[in-house]
Amino acid sequence: MVRPRPPGGLRRGEVRAAADDQGGPPDAVISNASIQDTANRRNLRLLVQLRWVAVGGQLATIAAVHLLMDIPLDLPAMLAILVLLAGWNLFSQLRLRSGRTISQNELFLGLLVDVAALTAQLYLSGGAVNPFVSLFLLQVMLGAVLLDLPRAAALGAVATAAFIGLMYYSRPLVPPAQQDAAFLRLHIQGALVCFVLAAALSLFFVTRITRNLRERDERLATLRQEAAEQDHILRLGLLAAGAAHELGTPLATLSVILNDWRRLPFFRRDQEAAQELAVMETQLDRCKGIVSGILLSSGELRGEGTVRTHVRAFLDETIGAWRAQRTPRAFAWNNRVEPDAPVFSDAAFKQVLANILDNALEASPGWIGAEARRVEDRLVIEVRDDGPGFSAEMLAEVGKPYRSSKGRPGSGLGLFLVFNVMRKLGGQVTVGNRDEGGARVVLSLPLSALTPRSAP
Image (cartoon, rainbow, N blue to C red; front, side, top):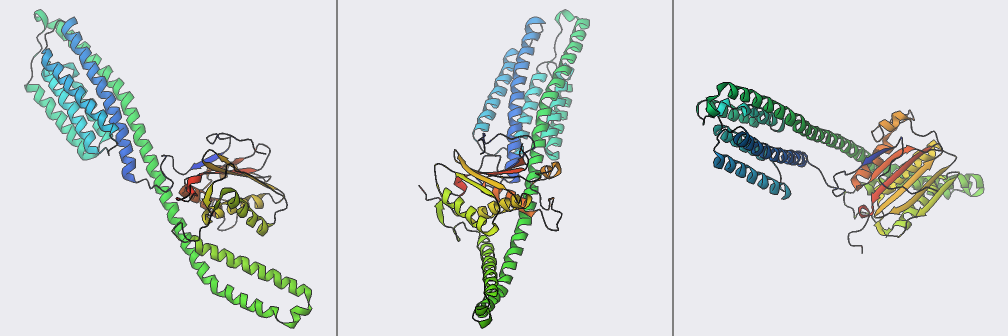
């Protein structure tokens, strides 16, 4: 008896492969563009946060300089720039909520707005002699991290041009009572504050942006790996379909020969030979069924060869057919799916169950167990055995082709196909070892992946 656990829980030493961690439909194809859009969306959200920090910091700095240091500033113009910057930030937030694609051009435009606002504020407060002029470097650094090379270079050129312009055109800050020494000291203190602020913002935001980009690259690498696996499966499918077509003729010939043998007097007299002939006919029918299943499974449409049934009947029929063919010594099957639901008799999922059960039987000829249950809208099937279990090396590379402990050429494709079929169906495969010894494989997939669209 298996104690039910939450679908999200994993025991120590288990490995799970998820089909679609983005929450999309099982057969959704995630493109490079969508991954880039996700990264751009996260980065734009960080820029919005940084811009709010900039608005608050500039407001506090203006108040400190004007009220505490008694340095006259053009308050209406500087506050108007802050209002415009805050308005642009509100527009960016609405843009994020719209769900539309975020492009590199939008990030580039946002950074240009930040550079323009900083240039205007510096123009009104001393120009190039303002200690906060080094904040241009923060904008250029953000552009180097977020943008491609042409846009980052353009942003750097704009910031450089703005700095050069501020060297010649600006409104000077007049020190109170012409206290040059005191004003120089304030300039140095301002430079220190600017350095600390730029360092803190760089550490916080650039680190988060880099993490977003790293996650994007990891996701792209995963997609490339999945594409390579799908290509491998396609080649295997074509090879299997071709072999099935080629085997059709010799199997038909053997069937005709066996039928002719059955009418021979020798087989009528010799009961032992007749029994062996019956066994040969049974095995031949099994081979023909396997070939027919391969040809049927090669169809791309879900409606080809599928039969409408219910979960419990589908599982009992699949397990019963496997049990009749393999005749395991001890097999514990517990079908606890409640409530029942209409599904397709899916040939691919049947093969998944057969592969898992075959692996368990080969590892543990003495006993295997299987249990099916329903957890909300998901079908969960657990297969257990009393064999040696999975090694640490196997768990680290589970689901990859030709990773097997059997040591035979070509082995290791069973679990590889299981993982890929479950990914296509939108399901998950959890592989691990039992506490009492042996291996356990848990299949979990949404019932919608097997449910007829017109079913109530």
